[in-house]
Length: 113
Length: 106
Image 1 (cartoon, helix red, strand yellow):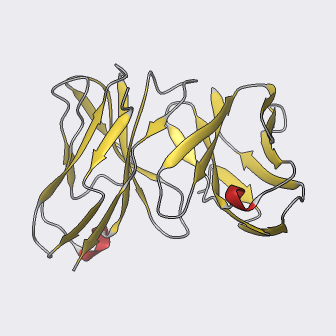
Image 2 (spheres, rainbow over the protein chains, first blue to last red):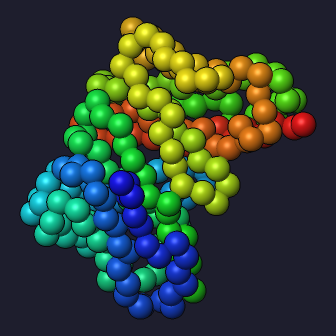
Image 3 (cartoon, chains in turn cyan, yellow):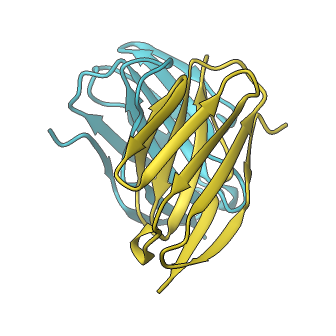
């Protein structure tokens, strides 16, 4: 099993550009989520999904879109990058939101200039 | 609002010392998680617990549900334990602490 595969590991964008962060898991997990990690703050939830075709907003959804067409994949799209989106992004998956171990991707360090 | 509070924020220890990291939470939970993040690296789950105590090698995690408090202990610390340790709780969603940065000096 590969676990959670997240790409790319590093990315530099210019303000206004768009991009997609990829996340795939091979554990048949229903729950997938995207977080951003900023200095001095805990991981903050951007969007999450409880299954294919179902997504919802988290704490900081503005400027991001997600879709879940399959159980395995949960891409995060930045529509028009802004310097405030400079952060480290993590994708995570688990069997459910409750009482199950979470598995994290390796992270994407994104810089918007 | 901080649903999960960790202490200390930073910790420096000599190799071999016994280390304790504390976590308090204010929301109802189904489980508490301890995670480890090495510099520039991904996040790895160390423990998930909903009661009592768990032990993996030199790491021990305890939780007191009534007091809404958990501790992560590292016995005989080693430089390779240097990392950020993150406490998280899961209920309707995951809430994360800001992490404890541990440096173990040889």
